[in-house]
Image (tube, rainbow, N blue to C red; front, top):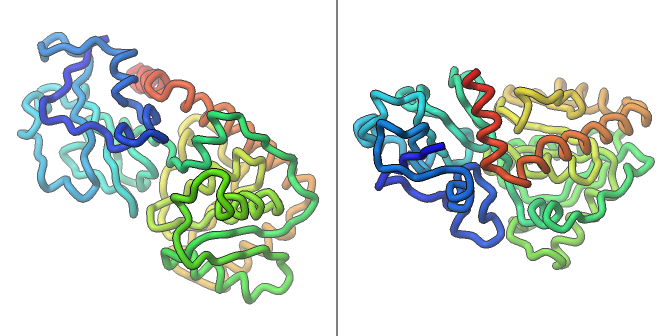
Length: 304
């Protein structure tokens, strides 16, 4: 398979970090292993535009990429950004890879890739112990209040006496915490101690906590004021997770939804947790094994 890489194609930022290297569909290693580079646009199967930041679209146009107008359907672009990726209209004719894209954008070939954390990457690489679901219905969360959605979630839960809660608010963002540090240990302990893992969006559109919860065999509850695509939901049943949309920030509505989750039987929680683990093994682990191969397999099905 031949790939034309534009001279102005910006390499993905993850390729510059040791921990996240080779975790995106078109990493340097992925391109080397799966493509033959060509400088002849007429023989290219695909064209790689590189990474474009979500806040940088105005610096680009179809004319920036010489062959886009003629071969738009063969052009691959990785869009990087937080807060909900909104794709510009001219790029929608191409092939887009990104994290947590907003729904309703009418993009025919949109590939959603996982959000990463050092914890998630370390767990997969080292096959860290998964643990069984605890015999409780406690709602657990440990994190930083870096967006309105999280503050609203904590406020509403504070007023629901019927729900057992294990909620800890960090004074600073703990995302960069080193594996094995005290900050890392208490974060994992909170997740392991509770059957229900609260996954409110953070400063970005989603939260890597969702995938971490699936890895640890916990029941994820996604809480967000944005509606976005989850990894693999175009081909995998995602009904194991609870998805609560709080776009209207209605306290009564969220209270009702949380109480409904609290009334879920232990048997159903066990079933949902097993399906969360199954999803992680069948979708996320498969992606981690070879992101480029996973992407190309997905792409071949879009072209059928």
